Image 1 (cartoon, rainbow, N blue to C red):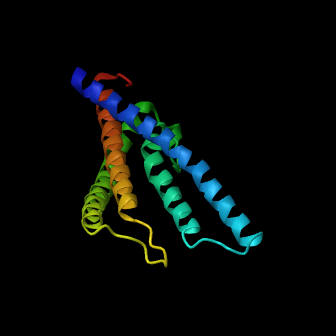
Image 2: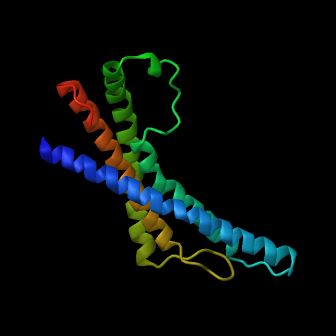
Amino acid sequence: MKFVILLIKIIDKTSEYVGKFASCFIIIMIAIQFREVVMRYLFARPSVWGWEVATYLYGANFILAAPWVLKESRHIRTDFLFARLSKRMQAILDLCTFSTIFLTFMGLMTHFAIRSAIWSTSILETSFVMSPIPIWPVKIIIAVGFTLLLLQGLAKITRDIIFLVKGEVI
C-alpha cells in the first residue's frame, strides 16, 4: 500500500512540474506572435514559420498541462448534481463513469499518439510550408502528454478506490 501511495505522489509531482514547465510556453508563444505582428505591419516581412510554431507551442502547453489540471480537479465539469453528493457517492460515481470513459478514451489516444510519434520520428517528419519545421518533436510531446494524462487518471481512480476501501483521502 505504501508503494501505491508513493507512486501516486510521484505521478502527482511529475504532472505538476511538467504542467508548470509547459506554462512557460505561453510566454514564448506571445513573444513569437508579437514578433510576427511587428514584422508584418511595420516591415511587411512576416515569417512563414511564426504562426505555425506558436500553434505548436499552444498545443504542447495544452496537452502537457492537462495532467496537472486533472490532479488539481480544475477541469470543466458539469457538476450541478455531482457537487451535492457525499464524498463517498462522488467516488462511486467517478469510479463508474470516469474510469470507463476516461480509460477507454485515454488508452486509445495514448496508444495512437505513441504510434504516431514513433512513425513521425522515424521519418523526421516536417511541416508542409516553404521553410519546413520539424513536427516530430511535437508528436513526441503529444505522446508524453497523453501518457502523463493516462497515469494521472489512473492515480485518480486509485485514490477513489483507496477512499472507498479505507476512508482515507490521499
